[in-house]
Length: 126
Image 1: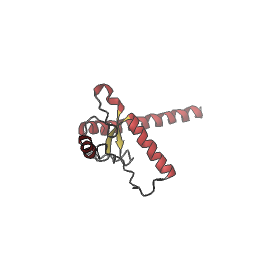
Image 2: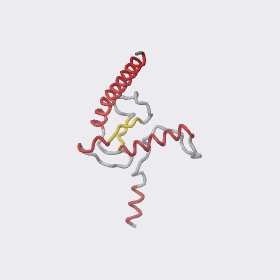
Image 3: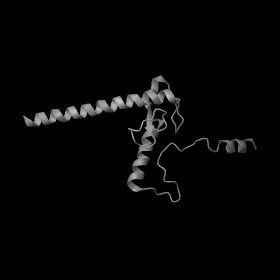
Image 4: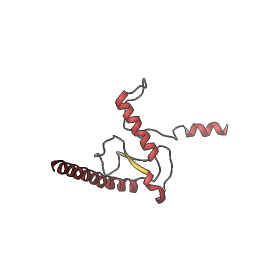
């Protein structure tokens, strides 16, 4: 009898945690989708209503409770880039930073795919 009560209490705690997580995500997800264009911040894949569920909100500092209204801790990433970002972060936490001389900033969102665009275009016109 006590096992059933314990299991029921555990199930209730899990259900409440899931509801809390879903409610929290709805708030910042909706805000981020209004603030930012529906484009992955890493691979530049564009999204429409049909595939919008594949676009996620990534917290740059990896703190899901840090949700400033201006969106400064968010970036929109596709499922694949988001998974990759979290894998990289977990590896960095577990094994440390193996790049000698590189920055130790883990905030994310630093990749700029167009950083050398001007130089590439200049070389192409030669």
